[in-house]
Image (cartoon, rainbow, N blue to C red):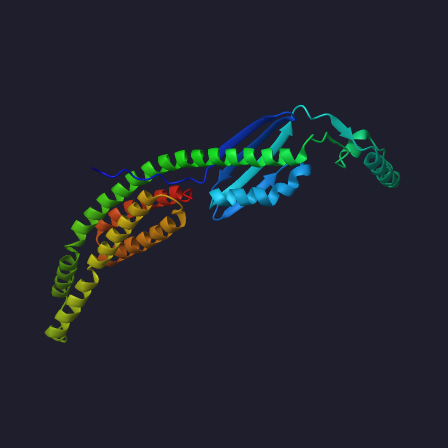
Length: 292
């Protein structure tokens, strides 16, 4: 029975958690995009910014790569507005001095723009609310993981199909490459027959040089390594987990072998297949950039 490939995780995803409390609603939204490393940014109400380290720690436990943005909002029953009159007065005095210098007037929107003058009322239990925020954030992270795995499954199916196509191309290259040394020898021999060397070249030396040029057209080792890299690529896709960086390295190795095959054989038929191989390889590379 054929083994089903394990899911890989995409770095693209979205998760949301919502908790209703006696003070109102806690909402946490998390979105992620592809990134070389794990880059977490957090936007939270000012009174809960101290949770930043704990939120980052929670993200690091569940994610290894991606640009992750966490948005936390509180709304509802506790949102009675509190006005900081002292701060408003201080802002007004400062702005008035500036206005006198530039010949302008101070308006209410100028004062409010200073910030922290009007805010929502405090919760009845700040510590309890902090715990709820962390719980809701973990819920959002779990849903983000589910979404990333769903995206990863679709990505994995596409990549498996593309790797199968690369294997087909490799077989065609292998068939043609088998005759490359003999064809190189024949081309060189035919060319030498057309020119008059006047017996100036030692026949044994000439045969040795022809054999060397034919040997240089042999790409059997490159094809063997190419097969190994394709096997490794498929094995890593099946393994799942955080294989993005490893896959990127394998793709570089495949590219190197394909380039060598194209340059060594010099056959037009193989050159055409190499172009197809590189085109498909580039599509795989673009897709693989989103693997965690």
